[in-house]
Image 1 (spheres, rainbow, N blue to C red):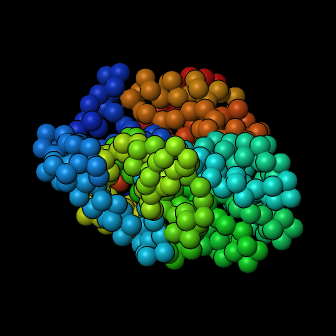
Image 2 (image 1 turned 30 degrees about the vertical axis):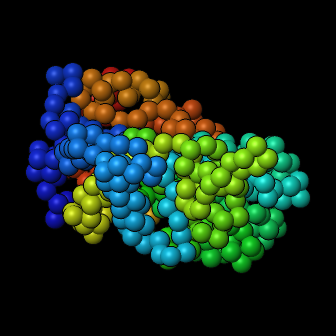
Length: 409
């Protein structure tokens, strides 16, 4: 496996958490789809913010508040450029993908009636599946599910049939499945959906740190992701949405910065994006998130994407040689994660044994129970990669899976 990246150097220099032993073995961290580790620069930026300019933003006239406000808004501007959003979009800071989707589902529900329809994917994370399911239960709107083909890719024929039949108000789907690892052709899907007047919300949680995303090119109506899956801090997420939609949607929460004027008789709300940022926002985290994205850019998506694809492909083939091991989804259009099971072994037991050998993976239904039922399994073992992983990590994983299989069968 060839790569221009030097993960060994990156790991040693920038990610000290990875230079430790777990259960007497050097740590191999392959749970990056759940959360990535944080570069030193990101951790240091949080400390520096709290030690130098920590102050609540927007409302203060004093120096620290002005400095903090400028840093916060600079982060918003940087993220807009990072996503190639352009003037037709607004960046709203949230607590993560989950809150972003709940924001849109809650506000969008005002436009749903029993004669309307919503389309989701069976591969959606619970955080995208459930808010729209509940919105449909509240409003009486139809709840429609797009399914997968045997290779794990989205069944576009069925999906496009739903779009033609339903003329849905909104379609919700992941850019990359957090279980199968397939990258959906979202640009093509969005173009097709727009023919029927259907808005599209894309869950980009498993995409934003792995390859360049241009929301302007995709023409997505809503695109959301979580900072902690992109080498940034926890507790912050991004909703990038078309300004035209945000102007139409009512506020999701009330109080604090989103207020323009309050009287006994009525309340008026602030301009975008503040209309959707009630209360004290995660301002320190926003500043650190900018640093995380600068770190990604400093390495370059070209190198990151190629490295992770090569590592995933290598691991896919090595795991595929283990007798009785089943990988879910084909190799094509697969990004940086692999879900698998060992026939006759419970996924949780495999994960426990791998942990004893110093390998951190995720086991369970991965917040995707509709997909697990579709696949006919209670859960899987999932390994997922980041820019600091290396071929040695893959080799350690494969060796550990072989040992676990022998112990459990």
